[in-house]
Image 1 (cartoon, helix red, strand yellow):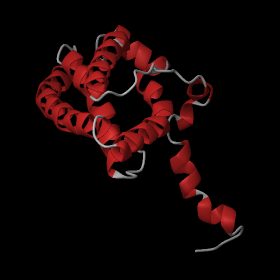
Image 2: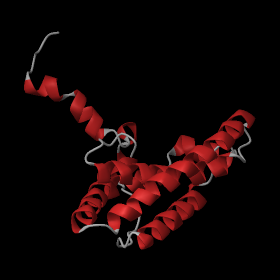
Image 3: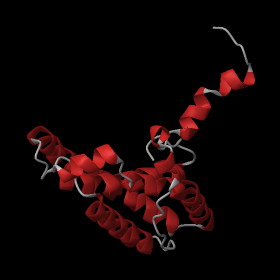
Image 4: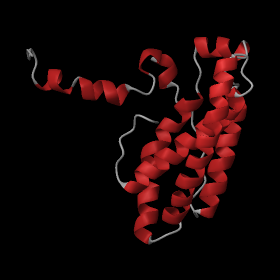
Length: 166
């Protein structure tokens, strides 16, 4: 989610809102980590992400419940960002071991808190509710989780000019 390009203002705000709505319950849960350093950092991060939820959430409401144009832009941003939301909640074998050891939080309560925050904000923004979809592709290709667009960008010159030498 964080690697997605800014796009227009509605897109940037919705991306920020989704990321903050995910990170806030994640950091809240991390305050209970068995790793004391991670727990201490999480305590500081909770305050920051709470601010980002408030700030970006207010903009989501203004734009979603604003003019016809702003509502259209929010809907377009949602269509663009929705496929990337599920990957924030997916875990691999390493993360699963860290969850079992108490280092990382269980993603289920984090996801429930995320969905609650989004549902409340979308209701105030008169935006339609949506359901987080976990994308099975990311589990099939773990080395590239969420970075496919970045990899394509980095390979653009080599594909456009095969054999190019720097």
